[in-house]
Length: 92
Image (cartoon, rainbow, N blue to C red; front, side, top):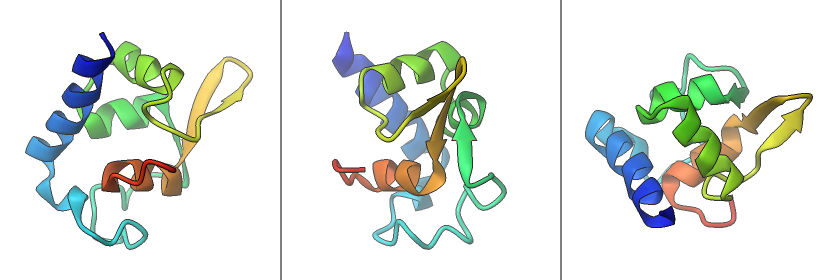
């Protein structure tokens, strides 16, 4: 079940925003993430990837989306770590 989740998240983003896979992960001023805060919640990530929030939570829990922080009951991912994930940096 891990494999479909990995490809679904990446494919949805690649279809919706082809410029997100550029080679400059730190320069996001003109990207789809420009209007988002420095720390993304699961709602933000779901909106960006085009996935259901439960799928986003599963991707985070499985470690596919790296760098998640839990504050209380909420999950957050620093935008820089999420950009690295989108760029294909496996270290996040």
